[in-house]
Image (cartoon, rainbow, N blue to C red):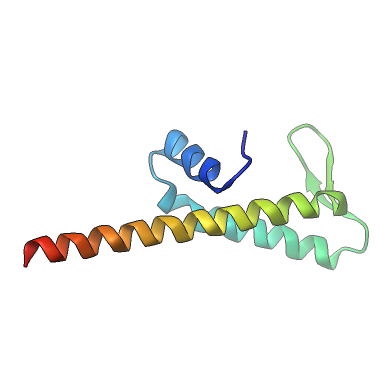
Length: 92
C-alpha cells in the first residue's frame, strides 16, 4: 500500500532494486495521464486493471501520487548528491 513518499521509494526499491531509474518514467506517465484527463471533458482515458474507467474522479489520487513520486525523486537525488559530496570530501 502506498500512503506516503517513503512508501513510493520503498516500493520501487523492493520491486526493482532501484527507484532512481524508474521514478522519472513513472512521473512522466502520471503527468501524461493527468494532461489527458484535463483535455477530456468528463470522459475517461483508459481502464484500470480492475476494469474501472480511469476518469475525472481519479484525478485527485493521481495528482497525489505524482506529488509523492516527485518528492521521492527529489529525496533520492539529494541522497545521491550527499553521498557524492561525502565521497569527494573523504578522497581529499
